[in-house]
Length: 78
Image (cartoon, rainbow, N blue to C red):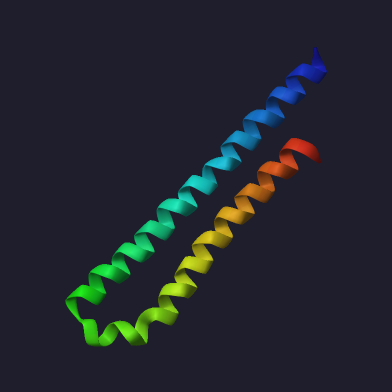
């Protein structure tokens, strides 16, 4: 019985950590959407902001990858 409860805890923890992957997708959507809104308002400044766009997308995706890693660690290493 104790092993079943431990396995259940691992799966619940991994599922909760997996929510971060969906949150990262929402974050990337916000970053890209805000860049597009700004680029449509001022097209001449859009070229100078593309590096910032890629940095923002990279940070948002890194958080998703970290949450996926935590989910895998909870599933298989703990």
